Image (tube, rainbow, N blue to C red):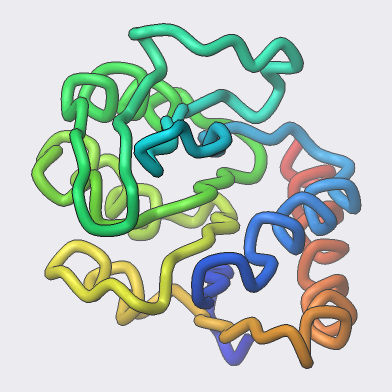
Length: 181
């Protein structure tokens, strides 16, 4: 990672970013904080809901409090308040490794959330983030080009090799966090 502190996995939709993040998280022996986002199945109009969860939320209930929006690929509704409340909360008291799965275009107008994300990248607590390769906003580019972030492009062809490449970094994080107690 050449002196970089954080991992950013970048790729197109459906390539396996979240799958790789989950696989790397299973290799962690330390606390995990931050957030994950998951989509529902598309409805009859093609819309799917998108929800934000804490990584340890096994219930993954869907409610107004964690519903960040709906999207059909072109049209979207965005609930910026969820980013500004739950999103900021998940990052404010982060401990261990901070997961951000995933960062995209929907949060661009959520200034407090974007600031909280970038503060995490400014810090030394390890960050494991996924980001859509196809979206370029000032916020997403600030993440991509952050001086402490190492960006890894994921493709269907390199998914397994990328896991093997990143596993030693995860193991190093385990040791560092154990030693810092």
